[in-house]
Image (cartoon, rainbow, N blue to C red; front, side, top):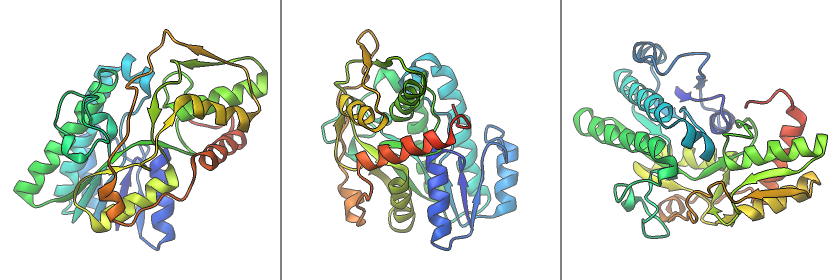
Length: 303
């Protein structure tokens, strides 16, 4: 049996669907099933399920605005969730845990393209430091549990994931779902789309279905840290241009008083390439799918 935490989110849903399509017996856990901030409840549920593999996808997640506004919450909640799930996987005698991390763990001063060797070099970027430190701490815990208990682990370091079932929060969400919500609102009601920053930041975006395929491959063939990205960066202003075309909304207003965050994020994906992974969904196609899904699901979407 395979257990997935955070199964109601953008990546958790895609991973659940992918693994079930390949014939795996999957238990998909969301916050409605167990409070992962409760260590006793988490261990009890995991022991009851007795999984062979745990995919730990759950976490307290915000975009740039939320990370800046709620740093204490981001640190404390993620420390509790990660610590509880890793310990519960050990107590349940799981063969392996695939514990999802984030490229926010890397320092903005790390040599580019950033490789896994740079995880502990320098401080994470200030805009996401609390979240990043919680994810770094999870790696330290995984290393300790591997050393003392023999718990095998993979530590996928995920680039920006997007797709259906994301949190489409226009204020505190990640860049793509936030923009999708704003462009859809403008398409429905008219008006101008307000956008943080200048659009000069570069990011690597991966569609959720492709990310799920990568995680399944990693679970089978890799141990330790591994970057999960497409290997291609794009300017935020190019994302905006694509969404202008997809939505039909042309009126946008950039707010240069708001931060861009780290300007360039590109990653060495040689370890992932060695597994044979290649993304199947282009950025333009992924944005179209995400926008169309949101338009169909609205207003019953997560924010």
